[in-house]
Length: 77
Image (cartoon, rainbow, N blue to C red; front, side, top):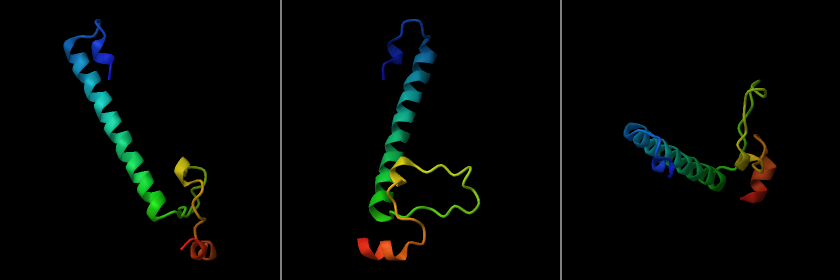
């Protein structure tokens, strides 16, 4: 967090920059924890019910089992 060191920002702008840096870092940390938890406990892709064009798969899900792959699931358990 270094934006608050910029001399041309007002005091309030420095506070907001600090807040945004902290909040975005905290949220990124939470997303990482949730992704790692999902990888560990539920490595199965979501079903794509006609939303293939709008569903965005997270990078950590690329190696998940396909939805409904019963045999693949049995092999990893």
